[in-house]
Length: 127
Image 1: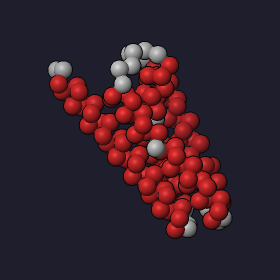
Image 2: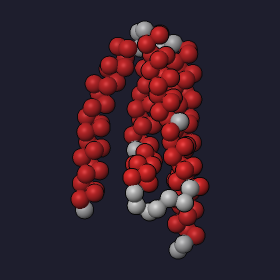
Image 3: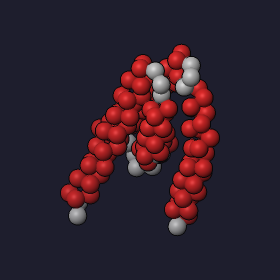
Image 4: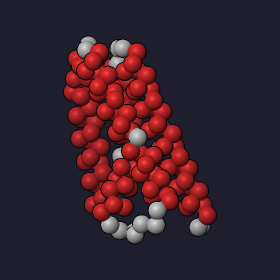
């Protein structure tokens, strides 16, 4: 119960803050150098999702702990990161930034889909 309420609060705050963020991105998109730097940072952030998924899948981590919790939080926030990256891609005007953000969207999307498939496959195997 408490966790669901916290998740709903987080989602509400995220979507409430997305509007000013999108307009800030639109303003920053006028400068090719600045927006390409933002796109590079965004691509670096989205590459943490496959790393987290690989560590969760391959490593024998304890079920509770700081590392496991951090990796799980990153994977649970993947849909929100995907929305933010997609908004950045929409605001992009220059070709290098568009290319980097397209790779970021694809990385985040495929990682999220793979995580859902792995979860469903794992839960079906233990039914």
